[in-house]
Image (cartoon, rainbow, N blue to C red):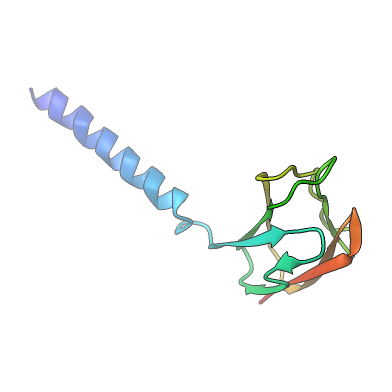
Length: 112
């Protein structure tokens, strides 16, 4: 009986830890940017170093949408409608990006 309680307690602690990590409390916060043919929403976000930005394609696009940093520091794979790609920003700075398929569609991530 004592061993069963110990195992249950250990499992409970493990589940609590996983929820803690899943919520982003252990490693920064998350921001989502929606991708469309002609705009990204929001077009500019401010985050802290260590935070993650998720880019989500919200429209149909043959071959998907690809997010590309203007300075070449990151590039997503092609994202089909409903797909998300995430990038963690470790260093402070301004990271301008555009969609490879629509170069005029631009955004910016400011890391403080």
